[in-house]
Length: 69
Image (cartoon, rainbow, N blue to C red; front, side, top):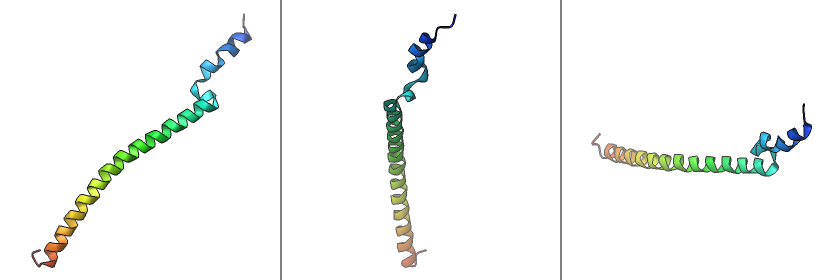
């Protein structure tokens, strides 16, 4: 026979971490942290690429200004 109290007792377990406001806040904070961490990695690589490109362009500019290229 169906017992409605068993459904009530297991509802928080079945709904998961997003069932409570604090759980949703935790999910949001973890998502923001992931975006920040991934962003730091991407920016670290981008910074190196921009620096290398600036050096190469500066060298080409100097060589072309001197009439070598």
